[in-house]
Length: 466
Image 1 (cartoon, rainbow, N blue to C red):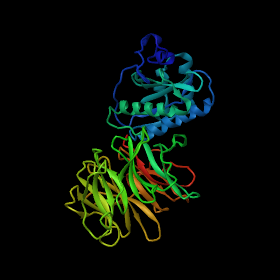
Image 2: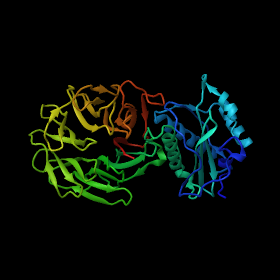
Image 3: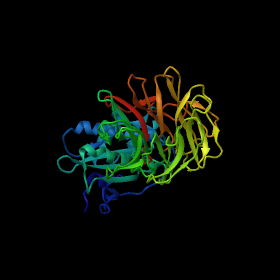
Image 4: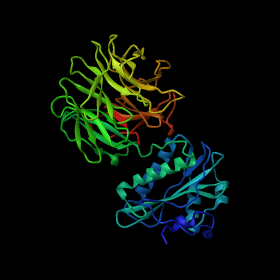
């Protein structure tokens, strides 16, 4: 019999109600019925129970608890409630009695509100430096277990990688309680550029979407300048521009293998590559024939097609989710503004009419209020910049940031709910989050949430698709 004692004992209100557990399947085991619930349910998150002591127990318990709260808040699908002293008492009592006291939980309220779902987690030491994370979610009104998972039973997680299990667990909660209506972003990552001001180098890093410092991985080691990262549609590759050969060339970096291949190494500049949704082509700005123009290029770099023919500078292309339109920046009217054209270069139109320079347009990955939107930065002559969104037809332009600092390089979360961007609002450039909706707070109650704390300047975020 597989060993998940607390999971077995807590599936229903009695020991008799659950007696069998399916055989392990890689890293997770699903052990219970799955039911769907309406949106905006009240979900209580309790702190992990620990079966036996291990190094840094209290710190790890708090980290996993905060991860669950953050992930479930940013799903933006529930009313999330954190553990109160009374909830902690009831939670511990359940474990002591080896059963869930649903009668007590039905009476439990926070701010006169009853809870719909109860989230419990268990940390099980599995040898020195390894843990298993067990997840239990209950429908309080019915007494049913709606989620029962064991993460790492067969292949325990190293303690320093336990957050991977936590993000997978919260993704399971989100998909189950919303009936797959909400796509989790809990396992997504953000690539960004770190500017080492002492060495005058810019290298590429990747972190978890919540900015956890220990998730940080350095991707490039060119001892040069790397800019403009963009994720491939499958999330396995990054394209970027590097000066590692003393000129701005474009590359594709395969993350699992570390292999770097040349995308564009033409004379002139090879700038701002962005993927098409099919992963077979990219849009790019090239100056091989004189001034910077917009091209498409196959991923092997062998075939290019020029799309713009203008004496102005055309840069920063981004391809629409359908792959049929390209937004880009052009100074053909004097100041750089956002334009949109069909993928063959036809039907060109200007969509920004802000009396400031515009930069780095980026299509929303999903429709926002039944229409796609384009986010971009707009810069004033004094160096101050803000983040805006606009519809592809140029209507309904909204400013998302608050006029504090220089706010640049916006990128969408895969669910279209959030924007990550770089900002100097605290002095040096850091990566922050804000809501994609104007005048809206983030689910944690903040207008702006800081993600990076790495020394130097942190710039040009790019959010992974998965």
